[in-house]
Each structure stands twice: as structure tokens, then as C-alpha cells.
Length: 443
Image (tube, rainbow, N blue to C red; front, side, top):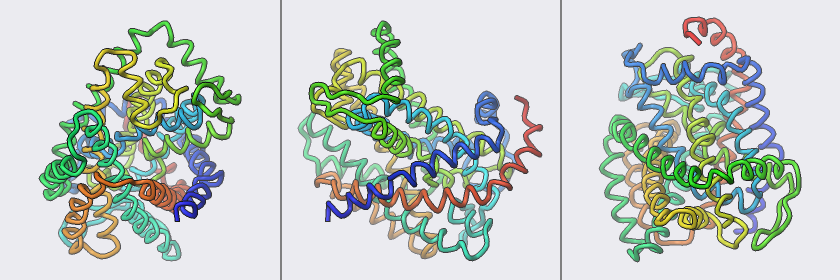
């Protein structure tokens, strides 16, 4: 079973999907005439604007961003970056950067469509996401894509958004402090239940406070290490760029990496980290209190900037400065060892970050999963999905999750393909309306 799933995962995340992800980002960036890069300052201004231009929606634009970031800033920023370097070499980080730059346009498009094609459910709540912009923006022959996305999202959420997260944090806490993984899972389950049973408003309220705090602590800790080792910054940057275009030789415990491996793992882990093209974050942005798709798109495009170009880059620089990546450790353990190697008690920055990052991802993805369930089976099923979500936590904390990782990877790929196809087909709508309304925002 493991070998079969590993083959399927390799096929789904092969050249076709990676080209589709990067190609869609490049296509949207060109169609938007590069404004996702030139309007970054305007996007931050819109993010902190107190004005809400709609009575529709459940949460503020700022809360929609922090909810989306709560789901994206997770183990991908700690374990995912380490895995990308361990398997793809330092060059993987360059391709992670590339995917993030073009991913900003993809994120813009996703949130734009989420607002434009959202609808009200039977409870009067505002809901949206890829399944709704496929349903309401494309013809009925594409409805199978909407159901495919929702089914894959429902399953992927339980894995990548829940089980994998709690397992990563429980293993680290167990290794460092000796608490049993099951008891750690029970504590996390109780804390998660207190948040998600209140729905998106409760989630948005918690993430708007948690995400800035956890990001700030991790970023400042990482920057401190980089500043203390400033003499290596040039060397590390050069190592990343040159390794992206040349084979990285085997050294120590590092097995070596080809250019293709750097590109594959850089793009794949980049998508795992910032979720550009995956179609998950527009589910959160659809709940924002705005009727302006361009405004919400600008706010969403900040996600790869914050998540990948800042947080992931800090992790990568620390790992490469420490030289721990040429050993035989991988994942979160590699990041912990790197921080500890360069800063006394630096491992606690990673442990603290991992705990908060994982917790925020669990509550953010719970909303994604339940909206997929709602699309397939109606809002009456949501409460049962929330209960299942909470029950899984202590179980996932205590078992090996190799199969869950593979299944989650496969489901993520199956989410991205219908979403990216929808973005391409609806691109003319995005380009036209953005061109018409962008003048109302001052660059």
C-alpha cells in the first residue's frame, strides 16, 4: 500500500502538476501586468484599513488574512523547509522563492474569485471557495471539478491540516519534555475544541491575535541568529542560487541533489507552505466583509510574501548557516538542531513556533474541511465533522503517520488541479475587472 501510494504521489506531483502550478502563476502575473509586485504597499494599506464595505461576510479582511495565514504558517515553515533542503539541496530554496513570487498572483486570483462568486448558505452565512467559483463561474459541465475539489479537500484537511500537524508537535514535545504523545494530543484536542466549535467568527478572533504573535517571535529569533552570523549571509545566498542550476554534490550525510530534485522539492514544499494554487485559502477569504474582489485579492497576495519569502527564508538561512543539513537528520528535528547549534537555547524558539504554528494550522484547516463537507453534504453534517476533527487529534498524536503524509500529498494534488484549471478559465474575468477598478487604489 505504501509503495503504491508513494508512486501515485510521485506521479501527481510530477512535471505536469509543477508546470501547471508555476505556469498558472506566470500566466496570471503577466495578465495582471505585474501589479501583484508593484502594489504590495497598497495591499498592506488595505489590510489595516478599518473600513468594511459590505454587510455580507462573517469576519474582517484582516481576520480573513490571519485565518488563511494560520492555516499556511505551519509545519511547512519548519519541517517543510528542512525537508526541501535535505532532499533537494540548497537550490530548492531558490525555486521556493520563484513559486512564491508567482504564487502572489495565484493567491490574488483565488481570493478575487472567492468574493465574486460566493453565496449564502441555508444558515445565512457567507461561504465560498473553489467549489463555488467553479459552480457559479463556469458552466455545469465543470461541476465534477467542484465535487472533486471538495472531496479531496475534506480528506486532505484531516491529514495535512490536522493529523500531520499534531503528530509533528507531539513528537517534538515528547522528545524535549518527556510528556506522552497521547496526553499531548488530549490537551491540543481540548484547546482546538474550544475554538472551532464557535465557527469562523471564533476562529477569526483567535487567529487575529495568535498569528501576529507567533510570527513575530519566530521571525525575531531567526533574524537574531542571522544577524549574529551576518558574515555568512553572502555565502548562503550564493549557495542557494548556484545550487538551483547545478547538481549539488553529496557530502556528509547529504546524498546529493540534481537540478530537477531542487526544482521539484522547492516548488512542492513551497506550495505545501504557502498553499498558492491549492485552493484552500479562498475559503477563508470568502468570509470577509467586503464586496470588492480586487481589495480582497490584494490582501490575499501578501500570504506568500509573509509565509515563504520571509518566514521560510529565515528558516532556510539558519539551517544552511548551521551546516547541519549535511548530516543525517531531517524535518523539524533538523530545524531544531540548527537553531540550537547557532544560539544557546535556540531550540526553544523552534519548539514554541512549532506548537503555535501547528495549533493555528489545525484550527484554520478545520474551517476549510468543514466547508468542503458542507458543499458535498449540507450544513447539517458540519457538527459531526467537527467532532471527528477533535477525536482524530489524540489518535494522530500517538501513531506513525507515513501513510497519512502520502494520502495528504495526493489529496493536495487533487485539490490543486481543478482549482488551477478554474483559475485559467476564469482569468479573463479577473483581468478585466482588475484593470477597470485598479485605478481606485493609489499605488
